[in-house]
Amino acid sequence: MRTDNDLLLVIDMQNIYTKGQHWACLDTEGAAKRINSVINCQKCKNVIFTRFLYTENPVGVWADYNQKYDKINHDAWANEMVPQLSEALQRYPLYTKSVYSSLAIPEVYAAAMEAGRVVVTGVVAECCVLSTVLALMDAGIYVVYLTDGVSGLTREKEAATELILSGLSPLQVALMTTEEYLKS
Image 1 (cartoon, rainbow, N blue to C red):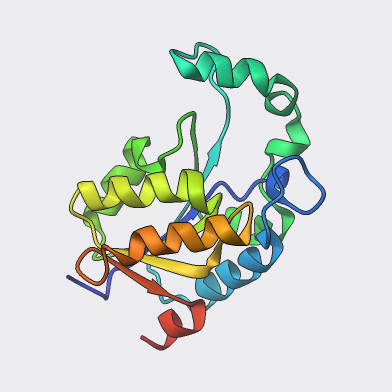
Image 2: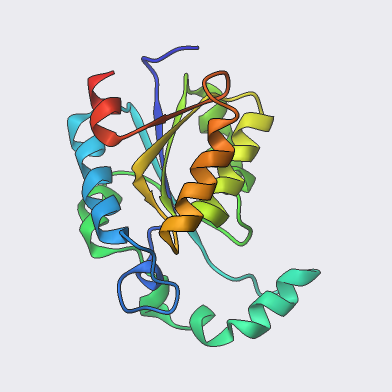
């Protein structure tokens, strides 16, 4: 596994996950701060942002999902990326998905396959982040999961996600804090 060609993958850091919003995660703002610290240290040679937006023609359970969350789906501000990452978003690509895993985006998949490792951050820990991590591992890609660069809906769900991933460590995933990653 190469450690000199890390891809930083920032998953779905959208306003809907900030304090006071419908899907507020515990520490979206803190995660954004730590994500910026990784971007600014330039340890990762590549950075990609993803966001979740509904699709006009959903299939299966996504049709039910879109109907249930129609108000959120059509709230432009809620779906914008958090302002704390706006500077980085001017320098790095932002790709859109309409499923949980960011690896479903062809450009993300291609970049991940070229990377030595993929450093995963973002929201929601127990949903889009976990789905992406599992897809990365299925694709044979080593993952660094930044425990404090990811935020979930509750502390219990964050801990459960980390417990699941710890069973796959260290062979397929490393769980690290941002500080541990920056020192590695």
